Image (tube, rainbow, N blue to C red):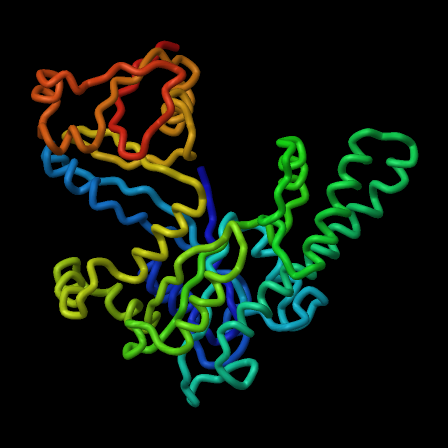
Length: 369
């Protein structure tokens, strides 16, 4: 399952610095001028999960394998991108390939770091990004409408339906709204909207980049939080506040050094961990585990998946020949500390094809092919 989170924002807001920190690399140039990032930088990052280490310790495992996400650092956007301004066309093409948008918004003043609009205004900056996505989607929908109008006149049922949906969405987005917030009663409508590949139908998370003295929040982050909470949107998320420069620095620390630093600033986890976890959650994923002395591993599967689908994440043969899943909850595994004690307590369950996977399940799949 290859899923991408795209880091998006205006030039010089800290996108590449954040990318370098998340992926623990220096691959992305982070310079003080617009369009420093031209070609998108791509990296893979582990999804933090303290449960995996606990399970591995219980079985004295040789190897821990975390879930991973693909992170893409996309060129900075400017007003007019939907009409090709700046690197607009390239920006929009790159973001179209991503599953989740990580909006990075500048929430600090610094006369030494150029702001493309001349001043710090996080709400304006976010609205610039969203407006360009909306304008690009309206252009996409106009093409869809044009392509289906002739077919609809010939009573083509599919064309009539697509035309109806495209017109509704065009009017809705034209009001300054996002496609993800449009409610379709019919499941068939939702499938058609997905085929349109609209930029504003993607889930988003919001990251405020501050200086070190703003980690507890500042006037800019407060304004942005209030703005996000007032919006009537399915994308309503808590604002994640980070200092990308600090995160880039501590990403090079050892685990012990990182823990010591976070304790010194009264943080239980880094801002990066929060960003990665939020991206994982926005993708609608949950985690199940396989446990053993050689390898203890986290696996991702969509929320709502049944046991055979989870088995298929390990190997297609597991899904094709699925018989049953021997299942233990994470809480029971940690409580009883060994499979022998778990069995004695009657906490080892046998689940069939209709079992809906729960986050934290530990599986041993039985199959026959």
